[in-house]
Structures are given as C-alpha cells and as structure tokens.
Length: 114
Length: 114
DNA sequence: TAGTATACCTAGAAACTCGAGGTATGTCAA
DNA sequence: TTGACATACCTCGAGTTTCTAGGTATACTA
Image (cartoon, rainbow over all chains, first blue to last red; front, side, top):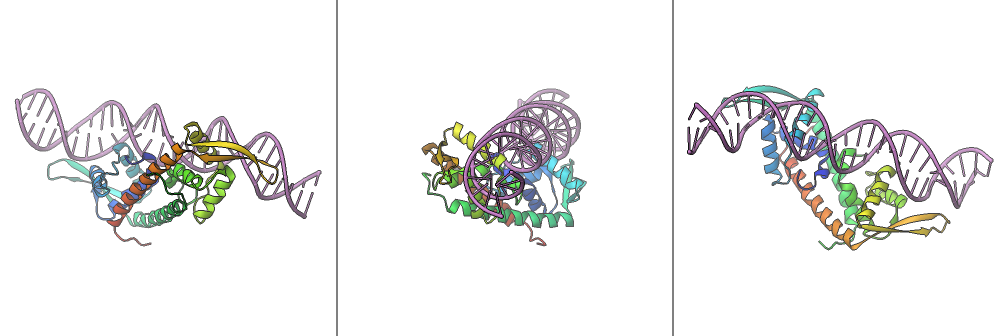
C-alpha cells in the first residue's frame, strides 16, 4: 500500500468485497480499479490480493470461474456470494464504527503544525 | 482491539500521539481515555501500548519522566515533543487520505443487507 | 491479610502485507 | 521471428504489528 501500508490491515477484505459487490471481477482488474477509485491511494500488491481471494473462496464468501477474455487469455473471475454480501455488510459497519471512533479521538487533539 | 483488531494497524501511533497532544499522560491513563473517547470501541492492550511508547521515546517523538501520584504510587508520564507534534500532523493527514479513499471505494459498492 | 485495582513491563504467537520470485500467454515492433 | 513488454495468475519467506499470557510491584479495602 502507499499511504501508510500499516493503516490498511483489516480493510483489505472490506475493499475487495466492496469491489465485487458491483459485479464479477478478476484479480488484476481489482487492483487497477482499487487504484483508480481511491485516486491512487491504494495500490494493492498481487502478493496481498491473491491470498485474500483464496481465503474468501475457501470460506464461501466468493466463488470463481474461468472465462476467456476477448484477447484469448483465460481470466479467473470472482463472484460474491450471499454469504459474502452479509460479510460485506458487517465489515462496512465495523469500518464505520472504527473510523468514527478514530475521528472522535482526533477531534479532541490539539491542532497541529500541519 | 475490539471492533476489528486488524483495522487498527497503523492507527495506534496516531491515537497515542493524539492523546498526548492534549497533555502529559501515563500509560494506564491513556488506555482508559482511549476507551472512553472512542465510546468503548477501542480497548488497547498494555502489550500493545507500552512497546509503542518505548519506540516513540527511542525515536524522540515523546519523552518521559516519573512522578509520584497523590496516592503515593510512581507513574511514568509521557510528554509529546516538537518532533512528535510534527509526526502527529503527518499521521493525521495520512489518516484523512486513507479514510477518504476507503469511503470512496465503499461509495461505489452495492447497498448491503445490513 | 487476602483480594482487587492500579501500574509497569516483556516474550512468543498470530495475523497481515509486501517484496521478490516464478510461470505463462498475448501484442507489437524491429 | 524474436525479443521486450503488458497482462494474468500464483507462492514463499521476511518484516511489521498486535495480542495473549505471563510477570512484578504497590496501594486500597474488606
């Protein structure tokens, strides 16, 4: 990740599920979309994404199928399941709670030299 | 942490510095304040906090001094330095960028069953 | 005087991401 | 036709961060 790699932990699953909630996608595409949608803040690495996708598949939050691209190359598409949508809902809520809590703490802090 | 332990990564330093920007504090107190200000979302563990404080001290973002509490017990107070304030400013900005990016990605996601 | 809250600390395990590597196919230019 | 580059998938080991679980010690309270 770019911004602060360590800030990312835990939100990756949320981001991946969020992307998949708008339609089936393949790995390489998700990385590009994430980068674009986040205005270049996120640049998830393949070494991060693929293990996440495999874990999500193992737990039944997504399933996958292969499909040939117009170019002729085979791509592996991921599809979010009902279980995955439920998980997304939970993760979203967690994120909201979490970010509000951080903002609450920051609100009390002294103005900085920034 | 409670909410989702892994969401926390990277924000702990931000939170600690933020707390210290409003005045000198000792470890135990910070854990309590964090819990209170975040409305019970954060419950940072001692095993997390103390190593962070030690690292911040090593890098010069905070310094510390011992002081006797009214009770008679000795407490170790931490004080944020100029360097620490600068670091806080940077971390704050990182947090803002990061959270906006996450929200941007979520904004595009389908409404969930939540 | 025994239990609980306060207050500090550390070592090892667990989780997560990244860097670096590997394999393979399609495209395009020399 | 061959070499370079982008696309597309994958894995392993290192590094970072947090937690669990312990340890030590003092003050208060029943």
